[in-house]
Length: 539
DNA sequence: CTAGGGTTAG
Image 1 (cartoon, chains in turn red, brown):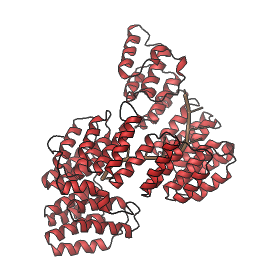
Image 2: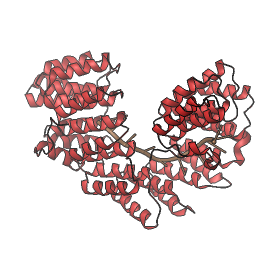
Image 3: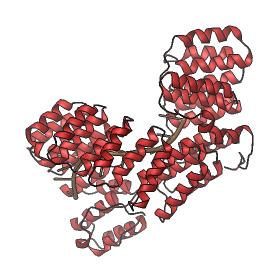
């Protein structure tokens, strides 16, 4: 499982590189190249760069180090580094490499630009991408089909659809690739009618164009239209199935999603990672631990070897939301390459299942790694402080987040702080805290304060909070969910029910169709009724 | 070694 998919023609490669399947082997080969004086042999250097950047997982840093020591890398090496960086989690490096090329007056070729543009698109860097477009023209690659298609894709996704359209009208209308890319861009923006028109006009439709359209409908919740195309499409692949399954999960038709999955298996279409992610998300939302365990088993059978980070993260989330924190911890420990989401998932899982000490412990463990926390991390940390009544500690983490981690607090963090103070009965302090906020407090913040006033019987402040609340629109689903956590975690089911109503009334689509008790039930039952097989101390 | 479709955390 360590090797990534390879695009290179493997048969023609020297056998030592074909046998290079992990980092250890790579370093051995590298060492022997140096010992034998082959380390300036470009044939080997190209392989070294390609293998560490593109083929092995988690060795891109090594590729960068090696690359930095090559006095005059050839264009293939530059392209490989840019390509690998563009598809890595840090596409900025691809731009930096291109800038370096530019500074050193190294001529890019027709392979260079698609990779650089891919990085711009991924980063949503409209200005940079437009500048790159200028370089494309300067070097005369404008009519190269691949370059032009990536340009269309960039402009379509980073704002200027007019330019994308112009490029498309000019030269690309005979090519199905930019046609469906443009269709996808319109569908993504929610312009389904324009997308559909493009789709209908296509002289030839390949599977991608069908998938683009089905995905577009599914994401907008127009499952009837999606279904119609799904039934019409001449041939389906795993993406077609995934689009439908994800669509059903998105609009909370979990049974339909599971049914489709069954059908998929019956006809012998092999589900992949994306299928599993959707299904895990369905289990998490349903709180269906049994089904979640089934999916977990299926995943284990499917991929022998390491659990991928992304699947591991989804499993942690599923187990946490289904109240099985031990299983979540088990999965967490099994993930080899933990990323910030892995830590966030387990920290949030512990926090919302009521394990405050475990949460803070986990955060301290995280600090000992090289993974930097982000704003989501602190939602978990602060929620834990709030749950456990750790006011001083909550303040400390709030400051730590700003001063040491350079993360500006957003509404969710403020919400946690107000909840923490409110629970502790420090109502006046909570009120002052709201006034000290750098952003305009939203409904959740006021409602949190209101709830606390009710609990502690402060009528005056409650009135004030209520007034503020009345003047605010209620439309952001994420914040309502946080609030419902706040309510539910206190055991105030009445409050939770109110929030749910508020969500329905304000047209919040998420969580429609079933009650909060079902959604958070298992996890919260566990917490509220204190069946504690997992002990806080031993994370 | 080029381009397009599906994805996890609150």
